[in-house]
Image (cartoon, rainbow, N blue to C red):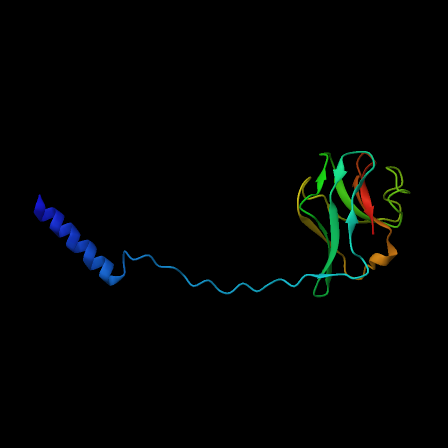
Length: 149
């Protein structure tokens, strides 16, 4: 029995010496930081509930030539069908379920009812031309709420 133990130990020592059993760790490439610049004249804001639960905040960020509306980690919305994000020319107080999409720009479906998420503002769109960012159920014309830009 000691012969097998000795042989096994010898094989393991030989393999370890050859680097076969030694753990190897790949060198990770250095991570390049993502440059996020806050757009100075559009600081973001807090969401205001209109018809359904909506809370949290957002900010406008610039990455190179692209602009994004980024919802914060504290973002929460009631679940619902066909929820979309709109840039509206109206203020949140003037927007209703019936008029929320009038003159508004759909920038995407709501990705999640909670947490961080971002929506790219299409190239050529000037956020100064819009009054608010809205969370709206387009299928049933129900305005969850929004925030003034």
